[in-house]
Image 1 (tube, rainbow, N blue to C red):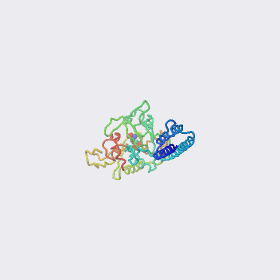
Image 2 (tube, protein in one colour):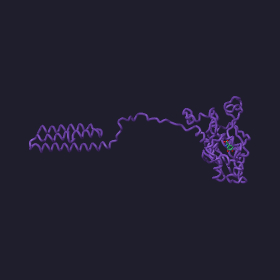
Image 3 (cartoon, rainbow, N blue to C red):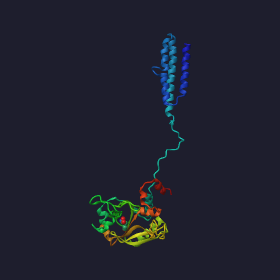
Image 4 (cartoon, helix red, strand yellow):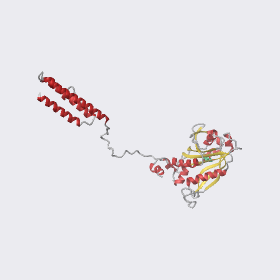
Length: 344
Ligand code: DAH
């Protein structure tokens, strides 16, 4: 019997020692099995040993084993509760390591440039609109005063999608859409992609970006157009540039002009200048007073209202500003190029 008592004590000590080292659910479960498993648990085996004792000793010894069993069960339950509330840090994660770096993209330089253009016009009270890249013949040509089969259409090498649908060749059709929807006063710019059937070379792409500008109100004159464009181009490209209006022709403006800016690279002094080719000037945009016929097409009275419009090539202007010789680089998605523009 004495022997039995000391064995129970020994087992208690063994249990307490093992419990102190338990740090997770798995170790706890192993300990529970080691002591309480129905087949091979230490305590189960102890109950079997009771059979070898005398009938007098048996109840006393049975009580000792039972007390230990209850003690073991309670201790395991308490420990389990503590483990559940502990904040577990995954033991394999080294929290001192630097985080995993995701590859960084960059805003596209043309988008950044477009945003600059937008901000200059927003500051002058203009709104911004966008429009469909698939247009009908009516909006791209006819409402803009290009009669069917008119030779002026040939200057816009058009990509047709069917008899009537085409990829817009310029952002000018948005003039019509805007004037159909809103009544004057109108002050708006429309940036967007346009498409032409062009062979790709350093200064031509079949897809490029334009910004259309349109202002319609009472008493609007060419002086307003000139003043606005001068402010816009000087803000965008620097105070030093000069601007020149050259008479031109567009079916939807009368009079029409092509607007050139002085070459910032050679100032007209280098006959081999990669920017201006020695002329000293670089053509940036087309502009003019909205043709009265265009106003009539959208039911705006040309006797009461007048307006001006312009269309600017975004790539062309960005190339001038950043002195980039080849337009294709904008669309090559080389991060070494695109990242340079968002550093400022
Ligand atoms: N849409 C013309 C083009 O793509 C540019 C243009 C010229 C736009 C005169 C205008 C304008 O709004 O008034 O070549």
